[in-house]
Image (cartoon, rainbow, N blue to C red):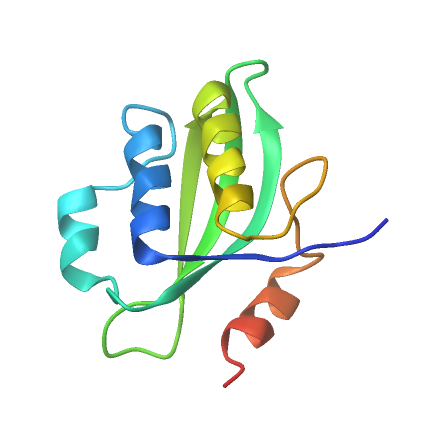
Amino acid sequence: MTKRITIVDTATFMRHARAAEGTGRCIDRVKVAGVIDPDGRHLLAGTYPYALPHAERTLWLVKLRASMVPARMWLDVPCKAWQRLSAARVNLGWPTGDGPPEVETLAVADAMLRLP
C-alpha cells in the first residue's frame, strides 16, 4: 500500500478547523489564529473514520509562529465536509487518490515536518 503525504497551507487548515466546529475534537479558531504561522505548512499526520458514518478523525502537525516544534491538533471533520475539502485539495494540486493520505508513524511525520 502506498502512503501519501498531505501538506496544506494555513487557509486550508483553518477551513478544516471551521468544518470541525461543534464536534468531539475541534479547536478554538480565534486562539489558534493568534498563534498559527500564517505562512506555515501543516501536515496531515493521520486520519481514520470515527463515529461512522458521521466524521473523519484527523491528526494535524501544525506550524506555529516562532516555533520549530509542531503542535498536534485533532479535528473531527464531518464526512460531507471531509469529502468536499478532499476534493478541494485535489483541485489545488495536492496528492490525488482514492482516500485521505496517511503517514505510518508520528515519528516519521515529525521528521518530515522539520525538513528544510
